[in-house]
Amino acid sequence: MLALYAKKIENVWFGVAYEREKIFATAFAFEKSQILRSLLKNIPFNIPFQHSEESTEFAEKVIYSLAGIYGGQGCSETFPLAEDLLTCYSQKVLKAASLIPVGYVSSYASIAKAIGGSPRAVGRAMASNPFPLLIPCHRVVASDFSPGGYGGGLHVKLEILKREKRGYTTTKEIKVNGGVLRIFPVEFVLKNL
Image (cartoon, rainbow, N blue to C red; front, side, top):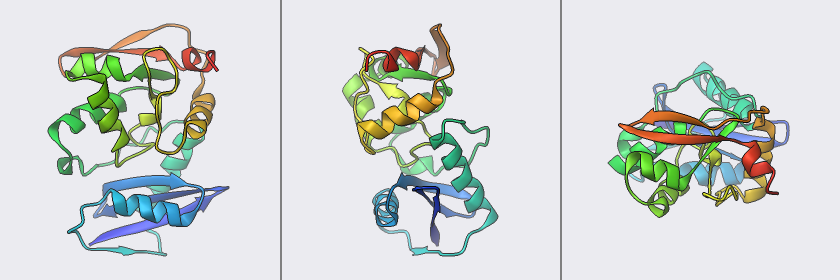
């Protein structure tokens, strides 16, 4: 049975849906009810779950990792994700996005070029990312370095990106699925604001 756990850290709620140390969904919001709705939206309808007020060591580790990413610190921890519930294409998109390090962004078009498909298809996969923050969809922007979209709101996306700013100045390339993913300093987005 899946456990849904949420915790407020400072003024933000963070949540995780998990079973046996495997994550099915993560979420963050400014109200607890939003967290639970988001987690429920991202778990399969036929899997039993229960909301837990009590934490486990695993849940706490996930929650504090989410808070660290939200705060711009990144996360060195890796967690097993229930990616097998996603389409093959969504798995490829999320894998590519997961490679974008703190301080950098990539574009929907760059991900599409690296793994195949269209920027619009990448955008759809990003919009349905069940692991926000752990899979940093906030680091994916439009080709012109405008923010693009974000389920948590563009102001939230930009605030996270501001906290992730590291002063980088050079573009890099990352190999992914036999293709090349171009990444750019987050400053490219922030200077356009």
